[in-house]
Image 1 (cartoon, rainbow, N blue to C red):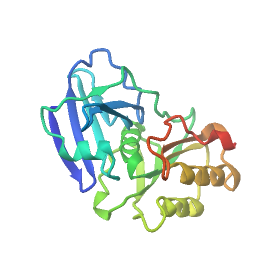
Image 2 (spheres, rainbow, N blue to C red; image 1 turned 60 degrees about the vertical axis):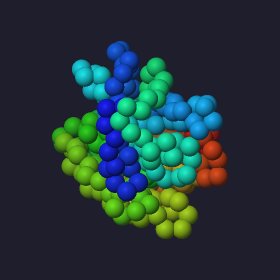
Image 3 (tube, rainbow, N blue to C red; image 1 turned 30 degrees about the vertical axis):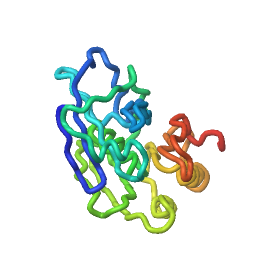
Image 4 (tube, one colour; image 1 turned 90 degrees about the vertical axis):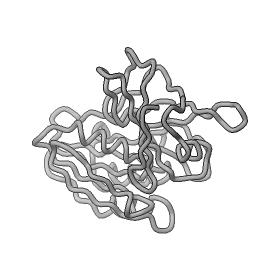
Length: 231
């Protein structure tokens, strides 16, 4: 690792260099596998977001959320310059606005904050972005950079994880014209928001982009869970 920085109380940024020639970063909001050494001399694998990738310098940036006491969180808390880890050969594709989209509404919890930041940085000027990020600590709110016009709310977790995010979705008013909704959070909450957006708000299915970043009481939940199994 080239650098390790505590961005917020619950977010650690790691910048790594290494054998990254030709590595496919998958675009904004893409995710990939990270492999770190475990205490028992084994390896732990989890899925993370590509926060940034500088192809010219071969520098990969990953933001690790310190949201649990699992093996990856323990590793990230003690990570230091010079530590080594591995990544998958390429990242899975991320998000790009639908053709003709004039706005994007994003719902995310702390785990999906790196994806939100990456997506916003990719949006063009002239777009409107409405962002809701539920954080575990108000101090975890970060600056969001974008050429788009961004309005952001940072509800703090209270009670069930992502309950504040589901409540925000229930009160949101989508802008006029064509646009997208992007959801990244706990699996059950993602489905609640997804059902509301498709049913009550009437968003076309093709304009909805959703993914579970984790699932309550489930270790290493599938990164293929988009909620589409429920319609």
